[in-house]
Image (cartoon, rainbow, N blue to C red; front, top):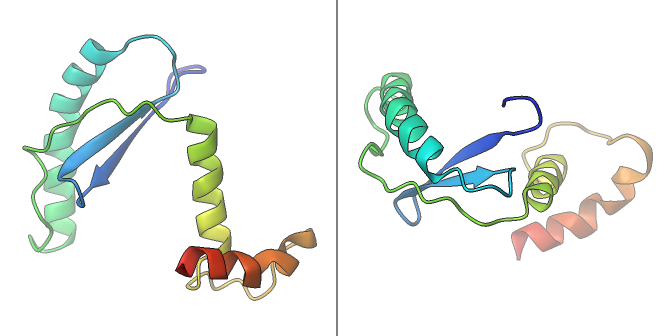
Length: 109
């Protein structure tokens, strides 16, 4: 994150790629090419060490910039974290608890 600009690198094992989400409307292809080449090797090594080298290597994955509504992505992450079945919070704050069962059904489907 730099000032109002931020990027998310999402390891996508389903499609063997690293999805790059960028909050800026400007073209940052060159920026992400340099940054991706630098950090993806380091992240891969970190994940390999943390999982005793059992995790699939992702250093050769392509890393395209995904045109995605970043606000929608952030709200999806919040939604997923709040209503996922392994969320150990017994009672959610405010009016969120009433939606847990309905949201869980949507996540499972």
